Amino acid sequence: MTVFCSSYLIKFANLCLLVLFPLAWFAPLMRAGLLPLFGTHEISVVSGLQSLWETDVYLALLVTVLAIFAPYLKTIGMALVHFGLLDTRVKPVLMWLGKLAMADVFLLALYVVIVKGVGVGRLETAWGLYLFSGCVIASVLIALTPHKD
Image (tube, rainbow, N blue to C red; front, side, top):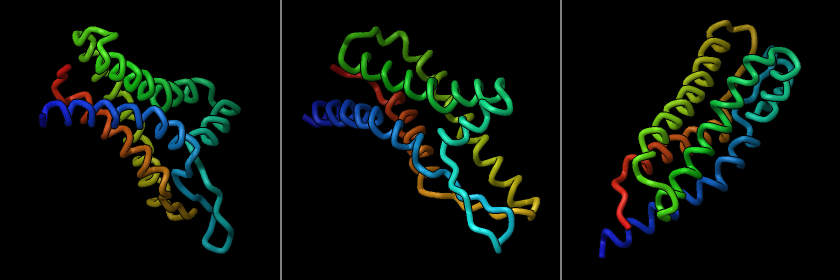
């Protein structure tokens, strides 16, 4: 009975990620301002990508793959595995996609540390950073659970 319940719970959690990831892409990751006297500007994955596409196409392409394609393809792949539409032998590839998504979370954390260390501007983390990080971590944990039909 517990295997039955946990199997459905894992499937449900993975399907929830299909909704939560796009929400995290538009949620504010951080608020940035030049000096404490000026107002802050909210930055999301999507708004950051829009700025990157205008200035650095190669970096924008990398971030697009890491932040959007890798985690979403992994989540879709895990859903297909959970519902028996994809062979479980593909899980190592899906885990690799999850590691790519974790690289994006690391890059975001690195940017926060660098900007705060410079001291010129003001940078505050926002709820979207926690949502995005939580989605990526949940995706990794879901992939680590043994698959049972």
